Length: 135
Image 1 (cartoon, rainbow, N blue to C red):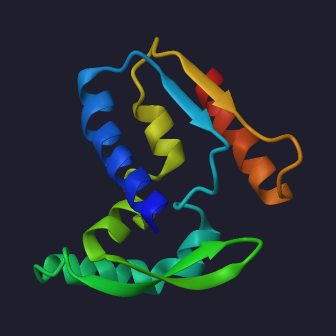
Image 2 (cartoon, rainbow, N blue to C red; image 1 turned 180 degrees about the vertical axis):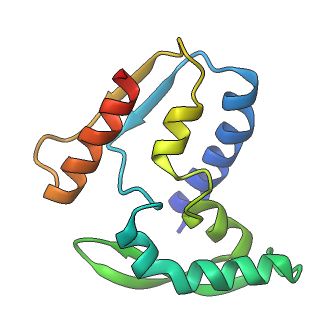
């Protein structure tokens, strides 16, 4: 959970800072699934809706149980602050990889490192994301 919270905080700062104020470069190491995909929406939609409701009710900093999804593990439960969970899994949020790529300023160098022997679904996603970077 510590790693996920740290990554969540970094991505929030990156979204608010790098995209708006410029970045020297972006390093994407083994980017994972895209939370805007139909599979993520199917697997995590209820948890995302609940986190959104909690944030709207002013309970975004409270810890709650939510669902997480990894294709090799399936759905499992995590404990997170509703606001952090929503930042990570909101299909329109910071982890929407396609939108993040489209929002990157032209000319910002990107180092895209992806495994060659990944799950077939992730390999297809990575190819599509790389295509967005290269235009």
